[in-house]
Amino acid sequence: GPGGRRHDRAPVRVRPATTRRLGILALAGFVATGCTARPKGPGAMRVVAGNGTEGFADGMGAAARFRKPIRLAALGEDSVVVADIFNHAIREVRLDGRVRTILGGPDRKGYRDGEAEDAQIASPHGVGVSPVGVIAVAEASNHTIRLLTPGGSSGGATRYTVSTLAGAAGQEGEADGPAAEARFRSPHAALFDRDSSLVVPDIGNARVRRAREGRVETVAGAEKGTFTYPMDVALAPD
Picture 1 (cartoon, rainbow, N blue to C red):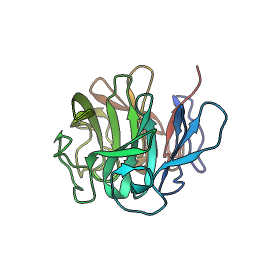
Picture 2 (picture 1 turned 90 degrees about the horizontal axis):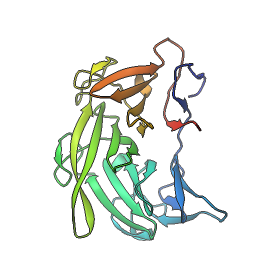
Picture 3 (picture 1 turned 180 degrees about the vertical axis):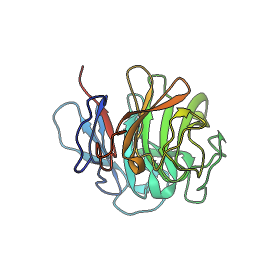
Picture 4 (picture 1 turned 90 degrees about the vertical axis):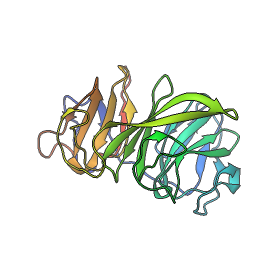
C-alpha cells in the first residue's frame, strides 16, 4: 500500500486498487485485474456492461447500471463476478454483456445469511473465486468475510447459499483465532491461495490475514509500520 513495504512472510504483494468508471471493461479471454479485465491476446478493451451512468439495473450491455464496481474476479470461462459497493450487491457480468445480481441490492443493505435471494450484504469491497466456484466476499461495513456456495441452478443461472466464513457482523477488531471469534476492520479484498486458504487485506488493521481450516491468522503486518492501507492482493508467480 502507499508508503508500505513487503513483509518477508507475506505470500502476496499489496497494491492500491482503483476504480476506472461506472462500467465493466472486458474482452474475450479476459483475466481480472483490479476493476478492469484484460485480454490474454492483443486487442483493444471495450466496455461490455454499463455506460458511465450510476444506478442499479440488470440487463444487457449499456442498459445495466452499477454504483462503484470496485473489484472483480473470473467466474468460469465467460463471466466475472463484481463487488458493486454502493449497491451493496454482488453482480455477475458475462462476456456478451449480460448482467445479473447474485446477491443484494440497494434496498437490501444489511446482514443476513441464507439463500442468496434472501440474504443481505453491506459494502462488499472485494471478491475471490475458488477452483470449485465458491465466491468469497470481503465485506467492509460488516467487517466480515462471507462465502457464496453454489448449489443447483434456476433458469440456467447458478444459485448460491450465503454464509459467514469469519468475523462477526458489526464487530470490528483485530483478533486472530477461531473464525467466529476473529475480528476484522474493513476487509477490502479476498483471494484464494493455491492451498485453498483465503488471503484478505485488512485495511483498517493494516494487516494481511489468512483464513484456513476454521481459523484466522495474521501473515503480514503484525509489526507496526509494515503496511499502510493494504487494499488488494495478488498471487506471485511460482
